[in-house]
Length: 99
Length: 466
Ligand SMILES: [Zn+2]
Image (tube, rainbow over all chains, first blue to last red; front, side, top):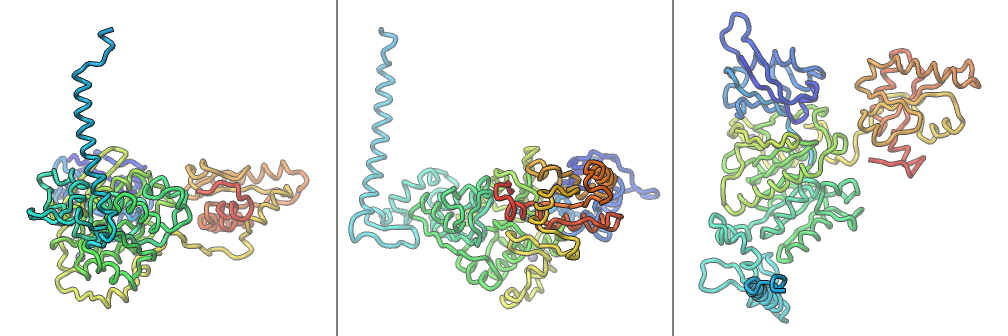
């Protein structure tokens, strides 16, 4: 399926300073649906080029990273269990502290 | 000649316009004269001097004075804001924590719009490298308290405003007392521990919190702890790793970016104070200046398990006072003094003064500057080689060949190995680099203590700092 992935708040620096990635992702073998859990693994493997600890901690994103699926906090759609659909937009954004 | 004479209708039009202007000016003069009348000046709930002219207009349902009506007329003319909104605003108080890049525009608008009281907390002094974004300060205030400077600017805009100056750093020891005096809190700080501390204090006191942040070319904005909405900890229960907490002083920031967010913070404060519109609670605004995009996203609601605002939370004033926010976030509240690393032994480090003697004596050596390339382009020491720390492991061969070349050039020192010195901005990354180089065979590599900042301070006062 086609997804648009966006990185912000400095996370784009982990993937060659590119903010927007139009990607084609397939559900894992033997599965019909693609979840955020699957996507995180895919992103880690295919997009994150350096310092993976700045993106992932354990099996989820590190503290301080907001994940938005179609402009909605993934906490509201089931977090890692959120099922993705064709043309979904997933945003990973690091919280800022500067002023 | 007919054609060059001004059109009579235009002249008449201008006369009419000037008459209207004259009337407005006369009214203003009368109002000001009334203020000067002896024995008539007293405080009116923080809204400045009061006289008969400044007493509420009788026969109306509001208590706005003629002066207020005139000053805020363009807001009173907004049907959705009007007298009701303005009256509420005039009775409200807002505390702005931080008179920096976010606080500057927030304070300017809060002062101008007719908030009753504005409080300012900050412990910093105005510096030249603040001016590009901290637009409330002027050059005349460099070296003086930011609070003093910001308060003067607010009073210059609106003499009827009550400005309260808190020239101190906000800490758990004074936060409850300071925040409790205000209706609304604006977080315009620049570090993680302060953000957690201000959030928790607002939860304990039941105050809405307008939170803004900006770094580089991006900004973020939301309202916490408002009307049953989430708090900062509902969203970020665990602090991020310190490496993810970048500072403007290291990563840079385009001045207008915090400017945009600070203006929006003032706007959210005004909306809450006047009970007009929908505050940005349960939603977050993400601003990406380079692509000119603003995205407003829905965020989670109040978390029932939240440590401070959750259902079973027993987070009290005493808990707040005892909480160590710097330990919790592993980072300091004061951003003016970055942490000094102590990674190397004494014999692996030299002072900038010592290095200047090495240069003067023409001793064989090479100098590697491990700052990022865009830092190096701002300013660098003569004859240095730029190899950013992040690329060091891939470029050690360049160091070997530079040493070889130096050995060949300086015949006087034949037999002696040229020394290898490493410098960075403040002396932390250079230690990391030397540590790495010593482990990869460059056993004589030495770090220059304090980096180019120390060079500017101790050796060459003309050397630019940033
Ligand atoms: Zn909470």
